[in-house]
Amino acid sequence: MNYTSIRDLATGFEETTTLHIDNILDWDSGAFLSTPLNWNREGLERPFEVSKGIVVAPGTYDGWEVAPHFYTNQAAPFAFEATISYGSFLSGTRQGNAAIFSFRHGSALSTALRLEYNDVKLPEGDFTTRLAGLRVGYFFTPQVYLQSLVQYSNQSDNWSANIRFGWLSTAGTGLFVVWNQANGADSLSGPLNKSLTVKYSRQLTVWGG
Image 1 (cartoon, rainbow, N blue to C red):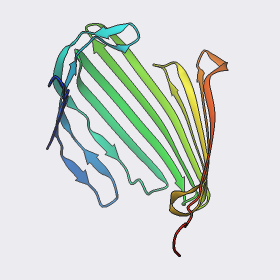
Image 2: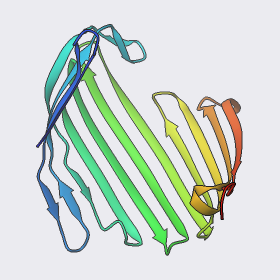
Image 3: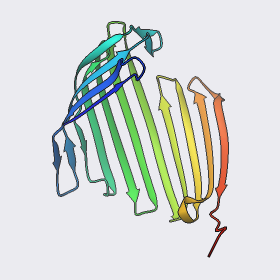
Image 4: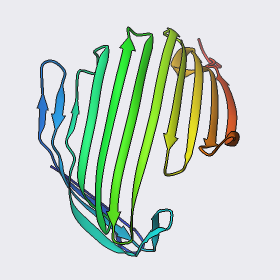
């Protein structure tokens, strides 16, 4: 059991409180099952636009949520992970589903496909969110790697891509090159934003041996 609470230091207003009650099963095969029961409280000091055109009034909202979580052996070549949740969400309810399908080949290649779906029903309006992401990582050597993440969200109506190249040295130093780009789903030819970041760091001994 775990209890956390966050309040505004100036006013004492209760912003977020969670009571977490959990049961866990671990198998020798590496599989895992968690069956948590959460009591959540969210406080809004001002109107909150939770989705486009859907505004929740200020107030304190609380209720229970169940969110079983299961995964198979994460060290196996093929692995699966899933979370199903249902319960209160602000002034209404939310049903969420998330799944991750992963594949790894030795210590060099790893991939993971993540799918998320949320169905939210509120007195102020209903909406759904969908998120899909593909992550790929390849280690040419233990010090040289290439990682990428491509993701689509229907809530923001865009897809984004992140590509990272690293050439590691000692103590986490080395060369890092990162490319980010986001496009609107309805106008793929025109990026919403893009950036290229290059960072090089090196550890030096300036005093003593």
